[in-house]
Amino acid sequence: MAELQKEALFPTFRDILLFAAAVGYHHDRRAPFSESTGDPIRYETLTAPAFSDTLINMIAANVATDDPEIMDAPRLEERVRIFEEFANGGLEFIQEQVNVRHQPVDLVVLDLVTETLADDAGAKPATVEELLGGVTWA
Image (tube, rainbow, N blue to C red):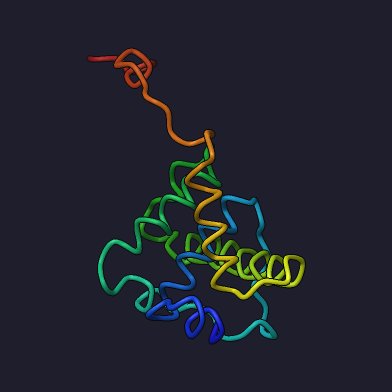
């Protein structure tokens, strides 16, 4: 993480973890967080400044698609654990890319961002009917 902060110019470890979780989710890389990996991520560290919690919640909601209660307040710890696993998987993926590509981490990060932005599998426009499909008005 220190290498990512110094060479890829991430201002904080929080920013690295957010990026790594997005990479991990995008590449479906999830690695359990263990004592040997380091200290667990404190939720307060991730949510200041605001809006970081949105990524945590989005990842959890996309992982637990059949479980709307994942967004309930008592399940915050579970959402953070899911985020940690994707962040850990993303960090592993980034390290593998550095090793395989034989490039500095800043170029690997740039390539990952460019590849993701060029990916056509992103969000597509939806019609009103698609958005409201299955909604009933009482």
